[in-house]
Image: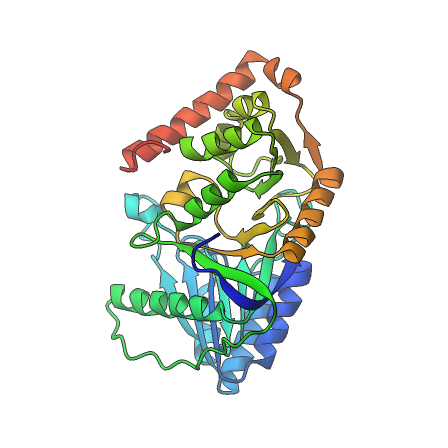
Amino acid sequence: MTPGLLSGNRITLLQNGVEFFPELEASIEAAQHEIHLETYIFANDVTGRTIAAALSRAALRGVTVRLVLDGFGSKALPSQLLNEMRRDGVEILIFRPEPGILHLRRNRLRRLHRKLCMIDGRTAFVGGINIIDDMDTPGQIPPRYDYAVRVEGPVLAQIAPVMRRLWKLVKWTQGRRVHRLHSVAVHSAPAGEQQAALLIRDNLRHRRDIEEAYLDAINAARDEIIIANAYFLPGIRFRRALIEAAGRGVRVSLLLQGRVEYRLLHYASRALYGQFLAAGITICEYHKSFLHAKVAVIDQRWATVGSSNIDPFSLLLAREANIVLEDHAFAGQLHASLQAAIDTGSRCLVHDHWLHRPWYKRSLGWLAYGTVRFMMGMLGYGKLN
């Protein structure tokens, strides 16, 4: 069992922006006391401007609105839009503002990658969806394939302090005066029947919580594992766990990025395909659009939805947040959604064909993988363990 699981929650699965953004906007419009939003990307597109306008309207009617943006992911957001929100009363903090194009240091890669929103202490949203239009993808192939969840119930008591702690930390690190944070009470009474927990990755007490939860669930798997991940470059322990699961008869399926978005990670990930295919693991590459999901279902009982990729940048550097559930109904719903994506939007690889790829394609993968390992070593994070 995942540590920290709380009973009595109602967790609603939301697929893609078409389901997520109307729910988020409606909750913002209904807010009466407090909105707290964290995101990696806040884009200046139709979706971004719509959410910005909703936040401004909330602030103008007296709601406390706090917005935390990552300095790298949201660096393209125009100052005019930020100033308009601030003028309307939205409090905005930038996590690690960009120091300049030529200024590269290890800490610059520590990003706020989680996507969290808490409204009135009654409702939260957790997932992988940034504040960006699904249509805004390279080549305009909509929509991005991603997930989030709407959360009600006792697990809100785990989400609220995480968000408030980061708000105070960012203010302190930027030399601003940190006052006592006046926040509404969290309504953590039972709202459903699901067991859930919030898992985060930070640089102090929770460095490996998300990775360990995955490993515990994989090691306990008896029937089936499905992982959908946009950037999949697992370390040795994770690879070994998947291969051992396949070896004891568990059906292991990986739904991975088929379209090239970040070339280095894309080709580095493909360097590992051979050992997975040789172990009997199914690999399907999603080509229908850009895959941005970070989800998994194990034995149609354990499930996770969040912001953490299975790569060294998410697992070792970024601040991430995932919801983990042990609930047959939710896991079954996510399983059906993933199976539909595999059946209608992906191409599954054949081991023999993969082995006989041209030599230059095989070399490209190992060159990319070696480059990533070298980068992590240079940044002081050692092996991809």
